[in-house]
Length: 54
Image (cartoon, rainbow, N blue to C red):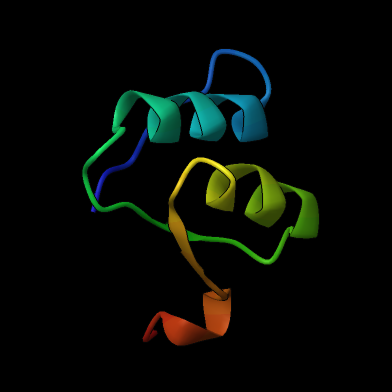
């Protein structure tokens, strides 16, 4: 797991991180439909927040 601080838009920062990881497996946990669309277009897998144990 990696925690990042976003200097501006968190979604834009997440998309940039996924793009930087090209060729490596990435899992993004989000419920945001637009963010899901953007990161899967870059090859990331996506899981919903309910998939993370509390």
